[in-house]
Amino acid sequence: MAGPTLVIDLAEPVAPAVLREFRALVVGLSCLFHEERPGAFHVNVPVERLGIADTGGERSTDEGLTAPAGATPRREDSQRSFSLYLIGAGAGDESTFEAEHEDQSEVEAVLGFRPVQAVNVSAGRNRQVDHVATALLTAAVLDVVGGVCRAELADGQRAVVSGLPGLLGLADDAWDTALITAEFLRAWAERPGFRLVK
Image (cartoon, rainbow, N blue to C red; front, side, top):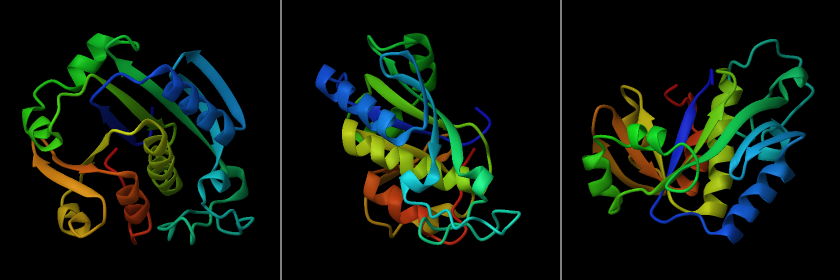
């Protein structure tokens, strides 16, 4: 995908009932929905369904889009494309999962578990609205599937995020990595200048 990606690490495989809730969440948020396999979806999500205001948009850019309440995407940008997919043990591409979680000993030490599955949430584009929408969509998924989100931090972001609610820990692996909750993502997305590492 061309935009940012967030990863939700899971200590246990997703139960069938939770997988059904995950699917129902994605279907409910989407205006265009394609299910590749159980737990793997390609969707278009109107940003209003994530709590980002669509004001009809006189703006031709998304400058100043820093908070869900203050966001002003252009009307034609209201629908954002995403891929959401469950991977790992018994849930899709296990080799990709292993590669993505290779050399994560410091992250695992902060997490307190070795992930067995993960949900990746990837945006199709890389505009500011996509970063906010990715954070809010990931928060909604976390509410359903549980787990801990991993977010890489850009230079200088460690100081910005260190006081936010829902920060479970920071790891200094290849990147500065924040281990976070849905509460954290929602608070972070409201900060001026919010942007995920692509």
